[in-house]
Length: 262
Image (tube, rainbow, N blue to C red; front, side, top):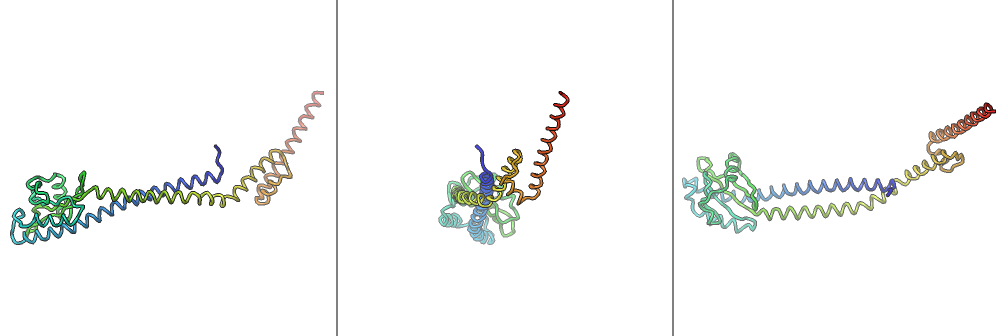
């Protein structure tokens, strides 16, 4: 199947447009994912910082982390305030859970990843981790001497995060598809309008070369092409003259050959 010039250019424009929209969609989805992650991290960090301050206020009075009062009730109140919160734990420097919104976790060891993330974040105000079904935000707990004695960790639903990212990506893909489909007719019409003159010139040029090959001196296409392109007119005149000279030379060769034969 042969395609015309306008069709080929339209196809190229559509491919370029689709590639640009696809790249923009991927980048937008990535930016949304990072923005949502930062937003949720900041939101839950703000909430657990309030819990941390209340706990550290008690520790400033000389109370050990494991002896703090009312921590489990306080954690339960904060969990009920957020539907996405799965659990909130407090663990000591050995990774042992001291308080939790889930009583069955008390006394257990947190994962090595949590401890490593917490220890790696010393000197900072927040740490984070990623689990199979949850995202984790944590803040260190310090006693009245400024020593890290444990950490407070909040787990929130990864499904909530992933569903929001998936939904936004789907919306971006739909918008991108609508843009591409909407621009295709514009590309077709624009190519036909903008390339109308070029298509005519190329058609005249093709007819001109065909006329030159057949030595048509009174060709309309040759007249139109020559009017717009003086160099083409000179070339056509030279080519026709060359054809005549070649014919004359061939005729002279034949005449001489016939004379020699006689």
